[in-house]
Length: 184
Image 1 (cartoon, rainbow, N blue to C red):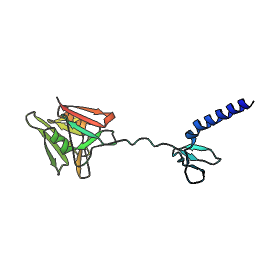
Image 2 (image 1 turned 90 degrees about the vertical axis):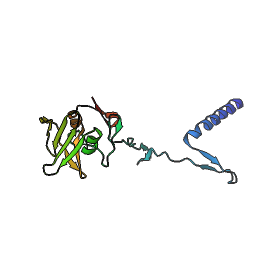
Image 3 (image 1 turned 60 degrees about the horizontal axis):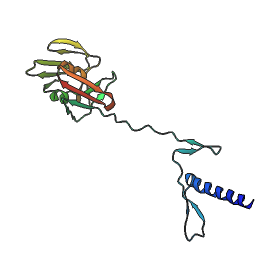
Image 4 (image 1 turned 180 degrees about the vertical axis):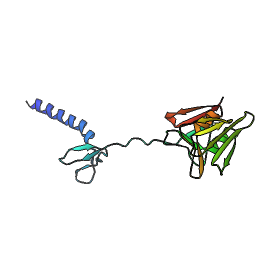
């Protein structure tokens, strides 16, 4: 019987020693009379609730980088104002930055609120008017599903409409918030 009790006590001690670190970190500090000091930090993912139980703290989703990047023929276009997605779910970008990156001469006509993008040598001329969904490519009327606008004192144009009007491939990489414009 004595042997059985000894083995039972040893088993309980072994289990206690193995399990204790999972629940608490206990330090015995020399010179304090052998008192046990619990140095366990509370779990930040659990919050106390009434009734003595605990509830898991809601976790915030990871931060999402919503910055839109635009590459023209492999080079990133950097502007003093960032591109954005408009209410029609279209990427709008600063007109001058995109037009010049595509090798165009860019003109603003204040009297008519019109932007003109001309690509010499290839004979492309694109005209867009602020607030209008119609535009012209070499004198031919076209329609887009959103309109150019002025924001932060800059003229923004729908990237796909301008790129395709200038005979470029325009691709959207959703995973990386990136527009790729490449000349054909």
